[in-house]
Image (cartoon, rainbow, N blue to C red; front, side, top):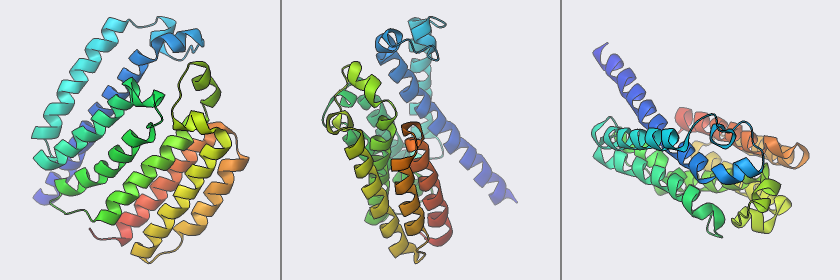
Length: 236
C-alpha cells in the first residue's frame, strides 16, 4: 500500500512539473506573439484583446519558470530526468523566441520530444533505448508540421517563415503523414503488435481529407494510441 501511495504522489509530482513547463512555453508564446495576435484580431488571446496586461503575464511566466526549475531538479524526476525535462522546456521557449521564424523550426520539437520519454524513464531509473528516443523525436517532427498547418495562412501574413510555412500545406501534411507511418512501423517492430500501422494509414488519409484544424488533434490521437501500446507491450 505504501509503495502504491508513493507511486501516485510521484506521478502527481511529475504531472505538476510538466504542467509548470507547459505554462512557461504557452505564456512566452503569448508574450512573443501579442502584437501579431492583436493585428490579426485574435479575440481568444487575453494579451491581444487587452484583458490581461503584459506585466501580469511576464510575472506569472517568471514564477512558473522558477517553479519548473525547482520541481525538475529537486522533484520526482530526479537530477538527470529533471535536467532532460528542462531541456525540453528550453526547446519550447527557444522555439517561441527564435526557431518558429527559422528554417530550423523542427529542431526544438525533435529535441524536446526525444528528451521527454527519456526524462520519464530516468525518473524510474530505467535506461532508454535509442530507438525509443528516436520514436519521440519523430513524433515531434510530425507534430510540428501538423500543428502549423491549421495556422499556415495567418503565420505567413505575420512573417513567420519556419520550414512548414516555406514548403506549404500539402508538403507539410505529406511530411507529417510519412513520419507517422515510420513511427508506427518502428513501434510495431518492437512491440510485435502491428495494429499501429493500419491506424497510421487511416490517420494519414484523414490528414488530407479533413479540415486543417483537425491535423494536430489527429497526430495527438495517434500518439496517444501508440503510447498506450508502448506502455502495455514494451518493457523499457
